[in-house]
Length: 531
Image (cartoon, rainbow, N blue to C red):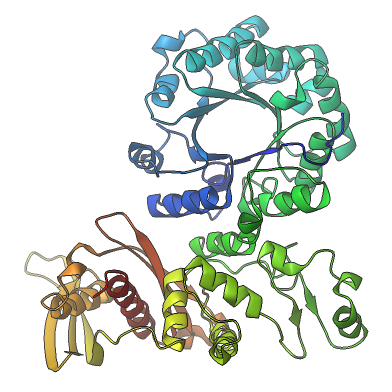
């Protein structure tokens, strides 16, 4: 069975759980909330939030889950343990006690693992799968079953691996997901095995979960779709344990633009792919992969000479798709042209109506390029971009003006013999005709500066009372400069209505970069409030 144009393929994102197993990745609750909302916005069908009961971060995230408009928020866990009933298994209880409408459970599908890891009979493992799926379904939740090491199990003992998958299917699982857990299966094997499984379990109930240990996770996922599977599990930018997971950022445009499959991703959502890819990288405080397919800065880059001449005559010569379809842009290295369409698209996203012929648009394009060359990154800082755009169009009041600030750190031993570091900030600002000076202490220089600034502004702008800083990230842009390096600061703020916004500041001085980001954060809040 081969995927035909127009067939529906469902997308399951596991960035927040499987992606978090990548070395160096550590999501906080604010990170998870932001990424979940971005995934929901582009039209992903399932967003797996994590493993309730596994760690305090996931417990906090599931205690107050994000409100998603399109995606089904999904909890992940295991089938019941050997020797326990579904009513007496703490792992299952943690899953069904959440409000997640979908629950994905992993279970063994390789007889070798049943013997060695579980130490129970093969029949008991089948009962564990059946009982767990039925338990979730009985509670009116959508049950999904991840058949762990399915392909290894199928190659060793096809009958038993298939029996495990069928146990979940017969118990009512909406999706039976075939997992290439160690990433060692090749595309031709995946296509053959999935086609064989689809003779027993309909393809409309089959999913694929591929790891990237042979650099074939995307190819394996596409092979599974060709063989009949209609759901793909993957992560943004392919992050995940060891070598990563199937990269949804590559899979989504390939499914839609190359294979003609229908997904929950609209054309508008497709144009957000470059943006969401870079948002994740900013959250992880790492540089985006310039050479990433579809979304990398160099994915549609052309150097001077024959290629540029050919592309300018007909882009199809060296571009397999128009870059604008995925929110990227053509980059001619010698002239650095284009970018206008992207800027106009961002205007639409923030609700800014602009005449495309306005010469200020061209000026803003050049300004953005210059700022990005300096180190600014607006894909992860939409509030700063909105202010930059509105300022270029003369549409943002100057709510306050900095006159000066001074920050001091005092590291000493206190009266109790404890080593402490105290930060104090003094700031002078002008608000209207008034010049105000305030002093505040804080937990670090940025907190002290933030406290002093808002202490000065609150009497004039009480709307700032419920604003708080929820995340702060610093990235070194010029590590070769050592302690003189240019730094980029990203600040995420929130208010009592749980609205979040991110701003950016860049400077060789980390305090100055922080103030720039704080200034934008406060200005954006005041502008949104109609101050």
